[in-house]
Each structure stands twice: as C-alpha cells, then as structure tokens.
Image 1 (cartoon, rainbow, N blue to C red):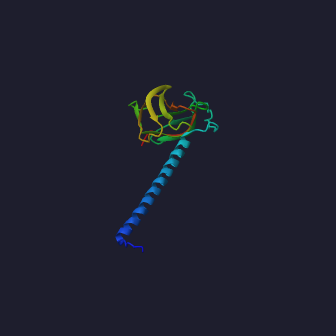
Image 2 (image 1 turned 90 degrees about the vertical axis):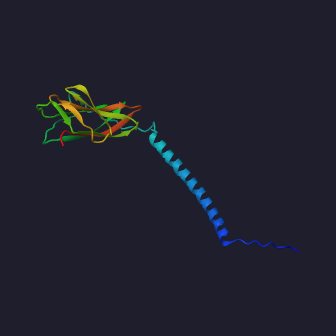
Image 3 (image 1 turned 120 degrees about the horizontal axis):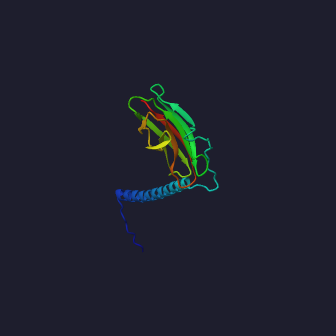
Length: 189
C-alpha cells in the first residue's frame, strides 16, 4: 500500500515563487533585447563613420575666387550690419578655399570689433575634419580665427583702415572630405 504525503503550500509562498520565476525571465529577456539594441546601434555608428571607397564624394566646384578676386564683397555699416555667405569646399580635390571680402567704415579709432562671426559646417567624408575662417587684412593673415560650429558668440577685432577678407578653409583633414558651410558676419548689433 502506498502512503501519500500531504504537502501544504501557503498561497503567499506559491505567489512569491511564481513572481520570482516571471521576473527572472523578464530580466533575462530585457538584458538580451538591450544587448541586441546596443549592438545594432554600435554597428550603425560604425557604418556611418566608414566611407564606402566606391561612393563618390561631392566635390566643391572651382569658383576661381582668391584674395585678389573674392567671391563677394560687402561694405558694412550701421545700416547694413552684416551678411551671410553659403558655399562649399573640398579637400583633396575640388575648390579648397573660399574668399569673401568686407569693409567697415573708418573712424577715429582704427580698432573695430566685429560683433559676431559664425561658421556652420556639415562634413561628408572625414567627420572629424577641422575647418575655420581666418581674417586677412589687406591680403595678410591675422590671428583672428573662428572654427566651424563654435556658435555665434565669436568676436574679432579688425583694423578698419584696411580691407578684410574672410578665408574659409580646412585646418586639418585626414581623408578626402567635402564641406558645405554658411558664414555669417555681423559687424554691428
């Protein structure tokens, strides 16, 4: 004859056991899903950074501007406070630099503060490339430099007895790169 042993489980114990089993499965599932999402994001980021060697980069067309023959020329004053110039440059091939001339009125104090210079850039190719706008005065480079994507709070001092040229070019680039940009110069508030 078989003897049956009666086991009595309390309802709270059964409930706790079932909840523990459900939570363990949910936690394992969440971790696995998070790992898959993280791996997919890492793979997408790597694909964005890699350049397909068969893909052609855009080239900035040669516009034949120079320090002696700038693409545009602007005379700024309290009534014409600034300008915006949009163009592109590319490195190793294509147009490597752009030149935009501007002047401010000569007054008793030759040092003129330019209220704001901004250079907003988008890169294709080397996304870690560095580009800038350097101010030249009467064809000579100054120490006034503003890098890409530094915002609008960049002030520079110029000599208002001379003609200024903003030269947009690459500072550092490792591989062929195309850059479209917008240069904004605001001489007065």
